[in-house]
Image (cartoon, rainbow, N blue to C red):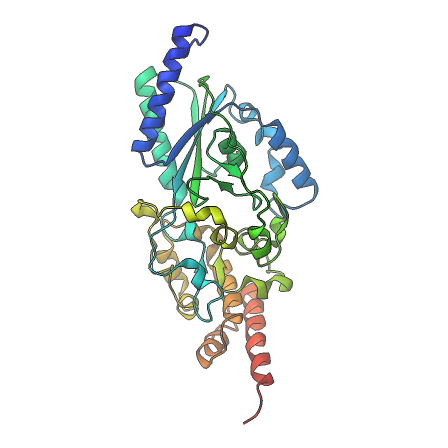
Length: 365
């Protein structure tokens, strides 16, 4: 599409309005557009990697500058359509009341329902089809956390929100409980104004982080982050962090739960993100009793599936080690001291030690 004439520019402006309208009809709360200049984000990423804050997420550095230069990843890209979709489910019990509960598990709210990758990818493909129906074939590619893409800097430039001190994207009218997806395109669409930051002097996220992973404003050491420890880390969870993990068996929401901007967050209207198998209010002992067949059946179509059954047991064992001591918890752990996984066995032993040590310290009758 030639964009040199004023008529062509007007056509692109009209197309942009249609893109927003189509996006809203597809269930996105906001759609923004940006150019592909990520030079500022590129330098920040390089500094973050240099500090080793990515831990064993070697994929963060694997693709060179393709992550920060969209036209290297997909040649011909000149604009990015960025979209956000709310995911916070409607819950009878406020999720913060489950944190460090004596017997229940905490699962990050984004992982309670259907795998968001599938939901957003399908909607973005439909959006691309709508564009194609209007203008004919055009170069594009859909991404949903599935390739070397700097989704948060792109969304910030597209006006969807600002990157907060906890490094999540925040929208001043909607908080931060949303997913992001992108449509790379060779259409030179008019760009939106970037969002401005509104964290001010607030440091709630830094103060509430259980493991001190937010080492400074806008700086996250992933190696300390509970989401990293329970999802990305494939080895043993370092002993120094196990008590701080509490009952968080998959991910962590603390920095979002206590962010003042989330008072504006609205529950999602997407049924796909509704909690499955009572994961928003479930006993740790019940989760630990899942066989591998149970786990495969209950995590089908869920983002939880990515960690595998072994790491799931590892995580739940740690949470049980932090649970309130009782005969049922100790019995559940003792019944799993000799699994086929040395990693699980080691974490079960640690968990048992927490309870046996506690029991031994109780005064004699």
